[in-house]
Length: 551
Ligand SMILES: Cc1cc2nc3c(=O)[nH]c(=O)nc-3n(C[C@H](O)[C@H](O)[C@H](O)COP(=O)(O)OP(=O)(O)OC[C@H]3O[C@@H](n4cnc5c(N)ncnc54)[C@H](O)[C@@H]3O)c2cc1C
Image 1 (cartoon, protein in one colour):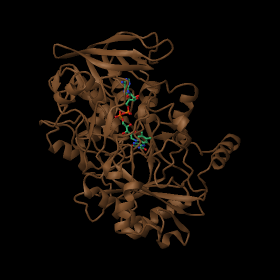
Image 2: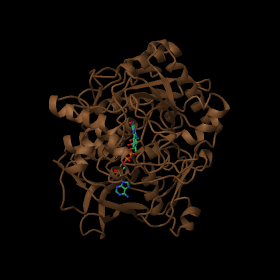
Image 3: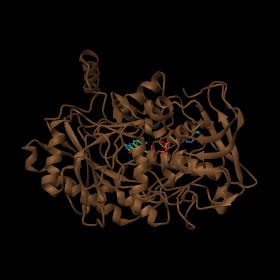
C-alpha cells in the first residue's frame, strides 16, 4: 500500500500534483524501489464523498452540473475576458483531488493521431515519435480487445466500450458514415484515426480508471508516500539546483509552511495552469514579467507562452428514441434501477461516440472531432457558475470540435501569492481559421442529423436551431456558443529551441534536478482528448528519469 500520514520531509523524488501524469510518474518511480513523495493540494479520492464521486463514472453528470458540488473538486479557475468570444470569461475547471483532472473528467479515451507525435519528434523531440510513444501507451493499457501492435493489455488502466449504447448512438454512427463517406472504425486508437466509432472510455467494472486508481491505489508501490491537502508554494532552487519544495499544509490546523527535500529530483506535474505558475513563483519565467510581480529571476525562460486549447460547439437534437432526459428524475430512476436489479447506469461515461473527419481546411490529417452524447446540453453556453437546466426532451447532442487550433494565448501570474489564481488567457478565436473549422463542423453535423439512417427519428434541432442558419450568422453566434473542451496545454513547451521551457528529456532548461511532466509540456495539442496523452507523458517521464523501463 502507498504510505500515508504522518508525512515525511525527504525522499529521492518529490512529485508535485497527483493528476493524470503525476500519479503515473510517481507510481512508476516508486515501483523501481526509489522513495517518492507525491504531493497533492486536493483531498483523497479513496474515501467519503470524494471517493464515491470520483470512482463512479456516471457521477460526472451531477459533479459538473451542480456548482456547489463542483467546487469541492475543482480549483475554480476562469479565464481572463476573451475578446474573440465577446469578452466571455471561460470556465477552466481542473481537478483538485487525488487523480487531478483524471478524477473529474469525461473519461473519453483518445490517444490522438499518430502524426501528432511524429510532428513533435520532427521539431527535435527525439524519442517522442509515434512508435516510441506507442510503447508507453501500450504499457499502461488494459484494453478490452486484448493486445496487438498498437494496443496494450494487462496494464494498470482499463479501457472499455459502453456495452449498452443508445439506439440513437448507433444511428448517429451510421448517419455519419453515410453522409461523410467515412469508415465505421472498430478502434480509432490504433493505426488509423479517420472515421466514426463507438467511444472508448477509461472505465471498467463500474470504476473510473483515473491515474490514481491505477497507479496509487491498485499498483500501490511500497515506497510511495501520498501527501494530500498539501499546497506546494514554490520550488526551492539553490545554486541552480532544485533541492525540494516549500509547502503549506491545508488540512485541519493547517497553514504552516515546511520544506520537503528531494534527494534526486523534483518533478512538476501540476497541470497546464499550475506547473507554469509554480515555475514563475520560483523565479523561472520571463524576467520582465517576474519583475512586474516582484519576483527575482533565476532563469529567464518563456514559461506560460504557447497556451492553447480545444473548443467545441454543442448542438442538441430532439430524438424521442433516446431513453435519457436531462433531469434529476432520469438520474434517480437510473440509480434506483442499478440498486434494485443491478445495472450499468452509473458505469459509463456520458459520451457514446466519437469521430475524426475533415473540413475543407484539413491538411494531412482529420481536423474535426465529433463528440456525441445521448443527453441535451445547456444553451448557449455554460459560463455562469449556476445550475444550468438543459432541454427536458430526450436528445442527442453532437459537438463540432476544433482539434488543431491556431490561436495561442498566455498564462501569467496575477501576483506573487502562491494561492492566487493565475491569469489564464487562451487567446480563443484570435486566428479566424478556428472559427471557420467550428462553423464547417456545425454545418456538417446538420447534414448528418438529416440522414435517412435516423429513419425520421430526429424531430427538431433544439439548439442552435433555425434562428441561426449556416453562413455568416452562425460564425457570429459561435463567439457566444463555443466552449472550452478543458484541454489546456503547451505552457511549459518541450523542445530544443528558444521557445522551449523543457528539453526532450523534460528537464527545465538551465536548472538541475527539475523536470516537468504533464499537459503543459506538449509543444502542440494532440488531435483528440488530452487525458490519454497525459497518461503516456507520465509513463514516458518515468522511463526517461530511470534510464529505461524497469517495471
Ligand atoms: C471537466 C473536465 C473534463 C475533461 N474531459 C476529458 C475527457 O473526457 N477525456 C480526456 O481525454 N480529457 C478530458 N479532460 C482533459 C484531461 O483530463 C486533462 O488534459 C488532463 O487530466 C491533464 O492532466 P495533467 O496531469 O496535466 O493535470 P491534472 O490532471 O489537472 O493534474 C494536476 C494536479 O496537480 C495538483 N496541483 C496543482 N497545483 C498544485 C499545488 N500548488 N500543490 C499541490 N498540488 C497541486 C492538482 O490538484 C491536480 O491534482 C477533461 C478535463 C476536465 C477538467
